View 1 (cartoon, rainbow, N blue to C red):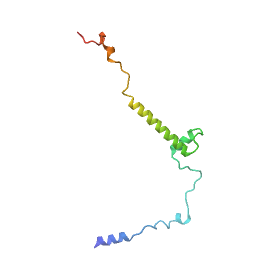
View 2 (tube, one colour; view 1 turned 180 degrees about the vertical axis):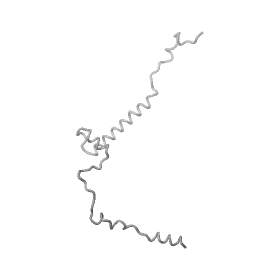
View 3 (tube, one colour; view 1 turned 90 degrees about the vertical axis):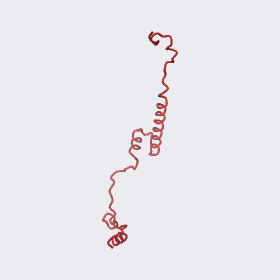
Length: 104
């Protein structure tokens, strides 16, 4: 019986309007912005600042970052797949040289 009563009480509670009567929502108070604050990520802002005026908006900064990442991946793949292609001396250069012959 006690569990049924708790279940009914939980279903009857409606909290959808609980915060409507707070002082902030009645008077419309909000945080004051004293300066223009951009919603752009910090890395985009950094690219725009450090470009010296070449990158004028957030969209161009995104393209610059995308190009940088693409070039970095290409260089990484180039270095990764060219590790095994080191120059080695061919075995025929070792033949008939006394320092490479077995001791007799």
